[in-house]
Amino acid sequence: RKEVEQDPGPFNVPEGATVAFNCTYSNSASQSFFWYRQDCRKEPKLLMSVYSSGNEDGRFTAQLNRASQYISLLIRDSKLSDSATYLCVAYQAGTALIFGKGTTLSVSS
Amino acid sequence: DAGVIQSPRHEVTEMGQEVTLRCKPISGHNSLFWYRQTMMRGLELLIYFNNNVPIDDSGMPEDRFSAKMPNASFSTLKIQPSEPRDSAVYFCSSGNNEQFFGPGTRLTVL
Image (tube, rainbow over all chains, first blue to last red; front, side):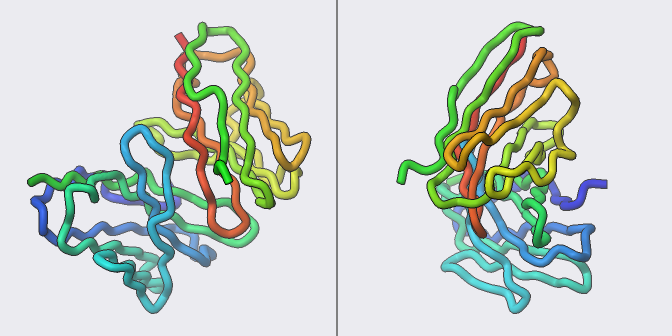
């Protein structure tokens, strides 16, 4: 079983829609969590960290539920430029980042 | 800073040939990571170094793969002999807390 699991999608939404991605992790010792964004044929880039209290960055909101070992990313008012693959990441101190396989989002006009 | 630098950006080779991928991490970063990405398996960690020392190489698929970090500014990932199933994008990343990825090397083994 993969340590970080995501729905691969694709999610096809119109501009302006709200879309949510979910992710589960199996290692209860994981301490930090992130969402990375990867554009087609490009490298992954950090989108935002995920904190227990939940955090927001503009149109993006990330939530963490440690009891359920569940992470989410909400994108409001989707833009064409949001089209990408979103990677859920878990981290335990002394190890490396563990990536999910990613969820693909396609925003159309 | 130029970011993480990888070379070559593209490599096409024939089965059985040796392949060497190179990475220059961002100056001041203590950790360096090698990943492989395919459609089927996603982004997989191969090996990572802390302060030039290999910490975890359990992701290296088999003995054909080897990685070195002779100093803080350079690392190599070598495949010898290469096989068609090694075809993938190989990413190097570096960081202290946040990880920064290089542009990747797209490897095709015919």
